[in-house]
Image 1: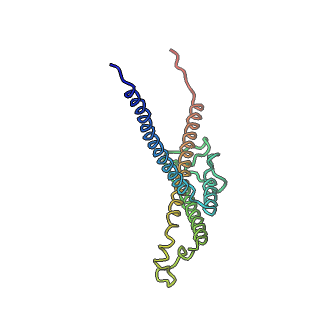
Image 2: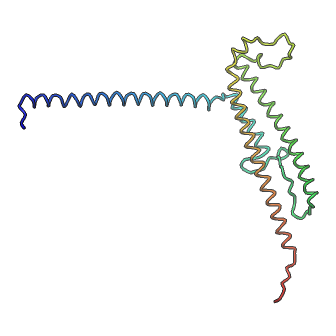
Length: 221
């Protein structure tokens, strides 16, 4: 079967048109895909910047001070605190001391009670630091009166409209408190790990000293 010249001309004109239509569809889809990807990426960057970098210069100084207090209680590098601020959960003295089970439990109970008092003192100190810096942030935002402590029957209590106007500060404070909780939990985790390591070392050294002091008698066959 042969095609005439007119049919060859018609087929030759239709092939570029079909290719051009397919190219237009591909270009429109590709442009739409790039636009959607850019919009999602920019949205994610905005959310990350808002959530991760919410702490301004004042809150950053507060974080540094809280970190210093926690590091003084339990150093993340040396695995021990600094001086009187060091918190120890296990009392493991020299291996030459001999403990009965009851005396060992009493010594650990006293040490845990002392460490719990240190943790309560540290918790109160951190709370005072956070309160002072929160007041500084509120003063910077012009809402210091809303966060100042007032009694229930005080006349100077802020109005509901004023409280609602500065309610956007509260989520920042909430995220900051969650971050401080994570720092405190990290310090507690280090304290527990250090206590377990001290207890294991104490028991291991005590066992080795007891084995070395015993006399091994070999029975001849």
